[in-house]
Amino acid sequence: MGVSLSSICGKYRGEARVRAGREAELSPQERKQLQKGAAENLLEISANGRFTKQVTEGTWSLEAKRILFTPEKFGGKTLAEMQEAAEANGRSFGLAFVFNSFELRIDGNALVSPDPHSLIYTEYTRVG
Image (tube, rainbow, N blue to C red; front, side):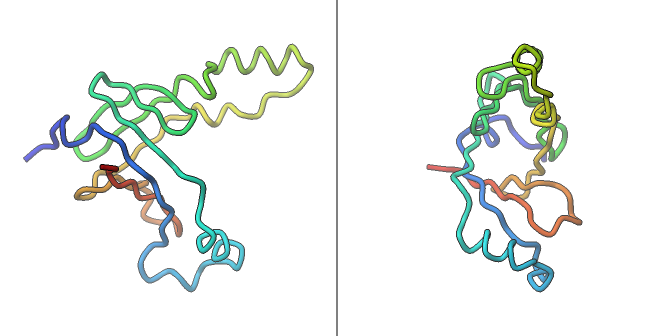
């Protein structure tokens, strides 16, 4: 049984989690960060093939049990606009990585960052 568009679209809240059984591997700084909690991490997936994640906007597609995201704007600006602004101000541009494609794996009712080797991952659960 495949994943339906209607089961994907909606608003999600992301929360940092530690892989089960790996809690002892956390550094003191990572423990403190997790206890403090992170800023609200919101994701909205729209039926028109668009997404918004915090200040990042772009397109998404579904591939089996993975959602592939392609950022197009960050803070309302494209990669080219951000590079041009940095160069016009005599600065080097170091934010190109925010335009890297990323994916989330569908895991039941949650969306999770897919790297099984990462100690900390993000789990998105539906809001409302």
